[in-house]
Length: 366
Image (cartoon, rainbow, N blue to C red; front, side, top):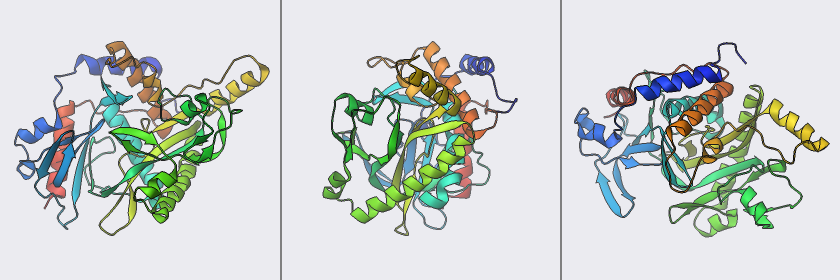
């Protein structure tokens, strides 16, 4: 760990500074409606849990259907512009905004994308002038494969109903095609890295066995390609973060087909939202204490969205104190992951979004 890392107290001070300057929330659609970018006039933004998307063609959202004009790069590649927000969602409920979350996860994703793109491929364009902390990303608009490849090396405790841990609590014998052993322990290491894919059912995630996917249109060949590439990437990232003193616990990746008929990764990769990371030294100490009977179970400090989930109550949004604590955990987490001190972009979010869109519009759009 470098001596330049922000301490927890310094991170708290930075978050306080950010929150004191928070402005009225605005949406990506507000920017499009403003008319700043004539090339995007008339586009309807598709909002997501944490990222908004701008792309050409039709799509459905909720009970409505929208049709956007074509959106392509100068060489004719279908373009998708993603605007990362600072929203946080748990249990399919928007809990509010977390200071710095948008740029932290952007930086996190870019580090991991470069690390894994030779294995997973990428839909993303490298755009000169966009920093790793840029919250606006340009990518090819893929044909999405409607699964998340979830890989698990540990049976992490979780309040999310679709997890292996919850299946273990229910005493299910099978989870996504894998035998569930009642002798496993919460937060304990699994006998091997498990592929436990997830898909959408009525807009909610559903963990399924691969056979379910095969019956619903995904070929065995495509599944094997996604799974095998994801397992190799999991090993690459595991070694990378271990050198930083972290354990890669689990992750999820999403995939699509590009215009060359290749399966490549899309959306975020190995971020603090899509993955769990634990401290190696802390986990080793807890294993020793558990073996001696000094603690009842493992409870490793998590650098992931699981920390935020612990604050979730019903449909309530997070309080300012909770937002502050979550932001600090994200700051400490990104420092561990990158091995570098966190250096925030202190411009207003609106400035950062407009600047990123301007760079992409000028350099990519036909």
